Length: 326
Ligand code: SF4
Ligand code: SF4
Ligand code: SF4
Image (cartoon, rainbow, N blue to C red; front, side, top):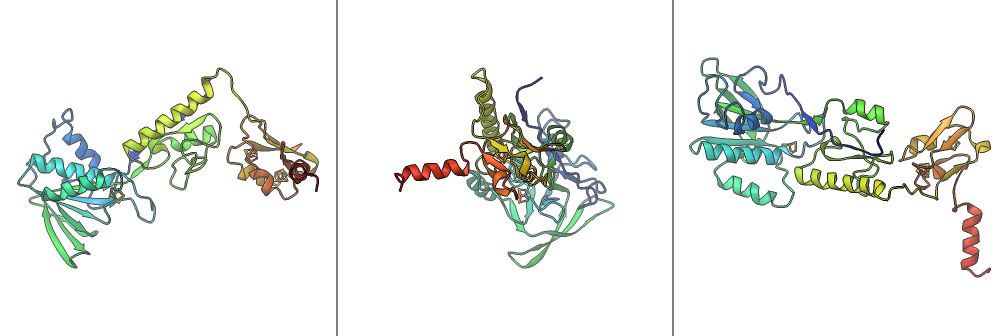
């Protein structure tokens, strides 16, 4: 029995099997696998090696936007440009003589300090190629990866004999998000991320009062944004629970049942999930959830919905009063 819920279920990585030799060529790995290799408490204690022969890599290539910004997933995963730059810098520190290349479509680094980080990464001799990798194959003897990439900035096809390839694969909603959405009666977008009440004004609120979202559960975002959203969601919970009793809105929708034809328009449009249809009486309002926004009243074809204290005759009385009875 709980009063409030914050959904912060995070994300899962897209496994790009069949793309760029992933799952087929030993020395093609994902950013998440590289992160584990780089971690001091990881299986390699922070020392990156090729999977095929445990040699130190000398020619490393990052491929960006794998599984993101494609027909099936048109969104940008938001964090992998910075992740690629950070990991490329770390590899350059560990292997100063290695040649490191990042193949990208765009570099999206528009948060505070990120542009400067990007410039610093470029200053460390990391090669940036703007273009999609066209061909990729494995040398059966050396297990090196032969790459051909078209550079749209220099208008040339560049060949690279890479010994380690890292894929920046897409971020997906975490497994189970859909089930949570069904149980809590929340909406998701076409990719399965939870949707908020209002993108600009209520980014951590859902259509159900008392249920909030934070972080990647709502869609790709960086750590700073996730932390801000989590704090905002926690404040919303405190706002609800700290007074000890819940104040409800007096201005709510009210249905005149005789006029209702059960067309369900109001149910579909309500951003708070506060109006439902009953077989016997037609539409009825959950006054705890309703915040009196008036959307249902504007979409009702039979004008069966009033907003308390904002009925037509009340508005006319106000106008008459303001005009001094003129
Ligand atoms: S963050 Fe960068 S690498 Fe990731 S999907 Fe967006 S543009 Fe591509
Ligand atoms: S006024 Fe209507 S649309 Fe707005 S929250 Fe209440 S029931 Fe939903
Ligand atoms: S929109 Fe109006 S007529 Fe349709 S179900 Fe809602 S209250 Fe009834």
